[in-house]
Image (tube, rainbow over all chains, first blue to last red):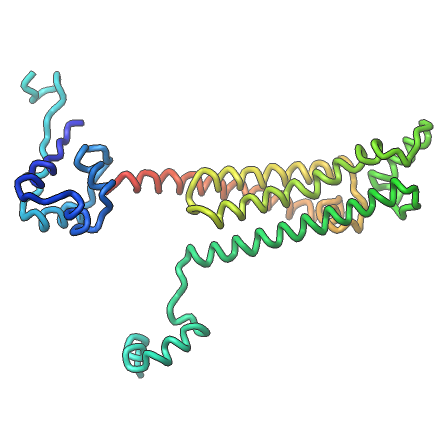
Length: 76
Length: 203
């Protein structure tokens, strides 16, 4: 998937557990795990806002775009 | 004039007492739907029980050879006449059961489908494919009951068969409308289930 979720990196940086973040932002651990793996169709702005507030970061710190291989703009 | 939140904050005990009768705290929609679904299940179960008892009563009378007051146009009387004219015993249990099978199907099939639909509404979430397929099944059983009733006219006065039994165009069109509505509901719920599934994939 072109959108990479760097949530695990931010969690490690803040030394926070997934369980604590899920409780802080009001979603289940299962949903947070799916978000970390990128197995979701989308993220609501409210959820993104809550994650940024909990981790004191910007949306750009959490999400990264990597163009698919072979497409214009990719390194390969 | 005081509004509701002011009344609740100033008189908490009266508010709790009155909320039982005046529904000041509205019940969640899902609870209301579950209660209605339970009522529907109960109604379908009682109707099935009554219908089966009535048909069994007629069956027992027929097997015992007791005279049954049936109009000449009814399916059962026409079948009995044809059996008698061909020399077969009208009291034969097997033949009478064969004669009664369409009656059972026409009466019980829609009620069973209705009960299963109500059970699905009572148990799980509302917008799912199971509920949609149960609506489709209810429509199909209503259509089957209507076809049986018109191809094999039931006894007028039979409590369940009376409704679809060729008693004028009104009941016929009511049945057609009900069948159409059930199919439409099935389509609507399928779309809703798709939207709900898509929504679940958003975090």
